[in-house]
Image 1: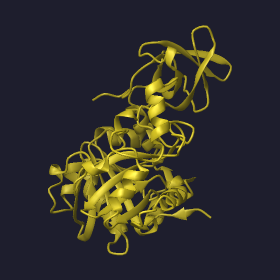
Image 2: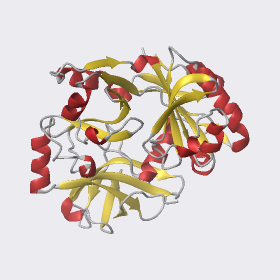
Image 3: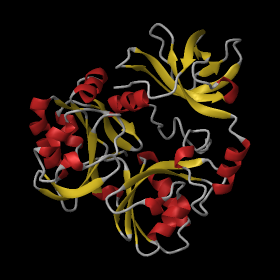
Image 4: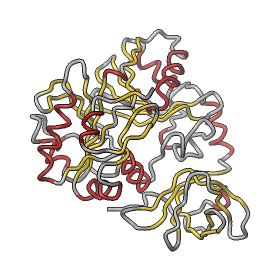
Length: 365
């Protein structure tokens, strides 16, 4: 039986097409992916992303545990700041990518992917030899993502907090639509200006916030948006999706997450394996590509070939870019062929379609 978010009946009322995603009944689209995608790029879209998981880590040992299980350096955080990071297995494979929010000196919130909640919880608790206090509050939290150029103006109608002052990867606690203690953050997954609203459903009415946002945002072009548009938007930016572009079979260096891997921060799970890849050099890397012509859409699992037709990699994510009107994708390509501008081919069913290695983001403002 799939779980449902607090907004499930609102999605039904709006005529959303519901699918199972990460064990949740989630809206994949309302009026249509293209329309919702363009609403986010040009005006604003509102996503229910309550399927994400929230773990709270508290106490004097909280930072020690986070440092042990994540690859970025959480000691650089201050209250009100968030950080993108990942967790690795001993062999360097990726457990998950996640966000770390520093709420106060000894309290953090970890935000993990929906399909990984149980796995991540098991992984973190099994590494908690320092007895940090940890709590899985995923079922208590609703999460909305308000994304798009009009998001500041829309959200400002519903809060006293000056949301224009919330910079990328920072957050404030505030009231939204009269509901208290909402975490208002700006981390984003669409490439547009926007906010995430973490709502503790034990304290606040999440559905009221959803409805008030849609009501106040209507004149500014706000539309509810589903996971379909969320995927096309993130792919235009080249943002990785766990289970597609990163997994237990990929390491941070080949996944272009070397920039957030802090090998000098002290010990962490998977450090030796990741350092070895960095020292020896990666044999393949997660690369972007654009289809050269026609409406050829690359899909996950398709083979990537060199100009002679030899297999040199595979597609991890692909779509028809709505903003650019051409096929785009990401995939692991052997280093010899992963240089920007290199001509490659994508095996789309029985034909070989020419493409060019292109460094994301594919969509630029």
